Length: 477
Image (cartoon, rainbow, N blue to C red; front, side):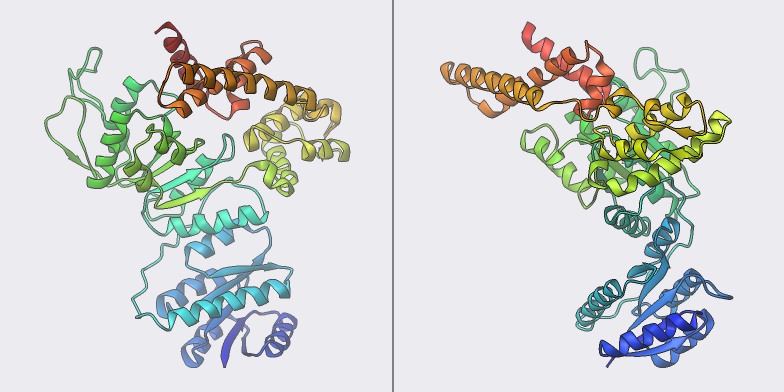
């Protein structure tokens, strides 16, 4: 018989669970407090525990820590409020199997229990190992959302916070990769140590190496007389966050790989190595696998990062989170503006939900901030929103068709020229020409505005400028 212990102080919920579990063929038992639940686990040895968070006396999360310390093989499913992000992350970090949101959906309970017992079935064929001690720090973050995609992200953050492996965060510009990295650090045993971010796309190649690894006195012209520690040294014992890691040069990738493998670094101009204890979290808005295929990113470094990968969904794929995000931003903005903002009109909210948000959460925040600033009352109206939001997606079918025709023409010309000249590497050359043509078209559309062009194309302004310079150098050559 499959034994399930329900730990909840609400007698009606306990009765409902008991009826449901019996009808599904489980053997239920009930405890009305965490303390009673711990005693029952010790005596009855249930396979699965359904544990409520809000309990009298010892809380559900405290009980979860005790259960995992004393009975690591018991599967614990947390019962919590649907949008309680902090509890979800903390529970997953403390090795909860999953969580069931309130109000209770019995279909979710059923599928979760089925997965739990499938896991127990597999576990029974494996040797028992001692459970690792779990940290108990609360994860601090500003992530917002209760969509299924974001709930999975919260779970992964909790899991990643419990170990020290290298993490790769993938996602479009503006999806919140920095916030995820900070949440992982804040929930880890390294939370009291530094979190050191480095924007690899914002620093010129010649400066990035010295920023990462530091330098000795006299290492190069302009170097400080006393030398300078690098970000690896500053992050010792903590977390180093490398944003836009795809922008690194091949030579710097080699040095980074060595640092990851050996946990040793060498300052520029130094003759000795320094031992460091650093967890690296990398982020990118580029397809690193495609860059590896083109020879633009080292394969060994890519797979080093890819050990644990987390993909952040674009905002257009989790539109149900838009109202929550708007409410969150309005709460923050009220303090800055010094005036109350009750919310956004229904028509305005609909416009915001219909917009595709190419700049993702960052664009939404900027839009809400602008609208709240312009609002003359305590409610944001459609007229307060930027014109592109009121007009919807401004790229018409005719515009898209014209763009496709232009790019198709460029593709045909590039292919014919390459074949006529007998060149190898046709794919790379055509992609480069298309890349150049697309940048030129968007730049022309925005009257040469680099910031708007970079945002629309999903890259940093620094990356865009690099591409423009590379294209210009190629033309001169």
